[in-house]
Image 1 (cartoon, rainbow, N blue to C red):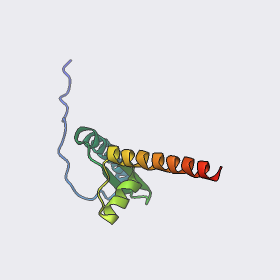
Image 2 (image 1 turned 180 degrees about the vertical axis):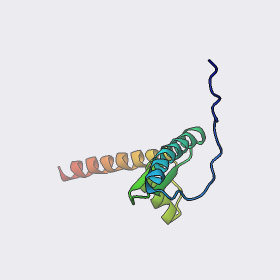
Image 3 (image 1 turned 135 degrees about the horizontal axis):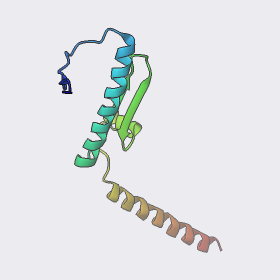
Length: 110
């Protein structure tokens, strides 16, 4: 018995979905695909990215690399993220200087 040929992938018309239930299902499926693409972009290109979406039901969903708050803060302050290796080096140097000064203070007090 011959199999009935399927319709295959159909091109959908891009317009607002009127049925609320269908809209929510489409949102859920597309949201996960969008977050997956964002994750791939972060991995492949080494970019920092954040996305915030509101569902038809009014719930908020967000995804960010390294995290949403960091990206939003950078966006509003317009400051580039410091080079993490250089930043760690400066922090290490400062903490070593503080330890050395505390040691000197302790010796003077004794």
